[in-house]
Image 1 (cartoon, rainbow, N blue to C red):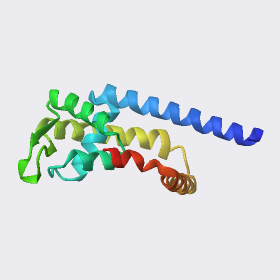
Image 2 (image 1 turned 90 degrees about the vertical axis):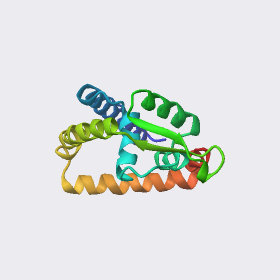
Image 3 (image 1 turned 180 degrees about the horizontal axis):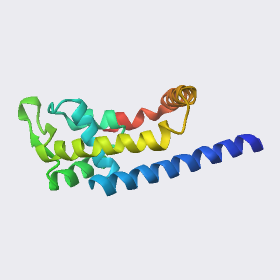
Image 4 (image 1 turned 60 degrees about the vertical axis):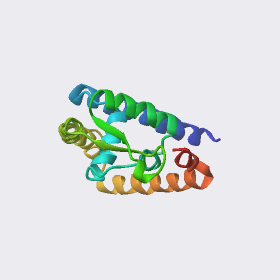
Length: 156
């Protein structure tokens, strides 16, 4: 790796870490939701409270089965989601949905989280920068997927 490449990589890693830390802290402070809570609620919200199988949720989040299980147990204990057996779907089938409390928590968090992303990212970059960022991100995601990142989805 050349010096310029190493510097670009270091800047990219530092930016990701700081952005992640700042958005995570803001989310926790403003809504008492962790990033993982928010991610699960966002998927369930997009599905319009449709009962969702955990493996579908894990595939969409790209999480391993054990991580998803632990997260759902935590969220269920806080009454953000509910899980129940669905024998009509097969033996040991489980479904998940967001509760009213979870929906309210997500509704309260999304506006502030979106505002923080706008403040930190969108207002800092030009429209052209944002387009380039999107193109680079999609290119990297395609490369990661081609190299086997789908393995997490198959474990969920």
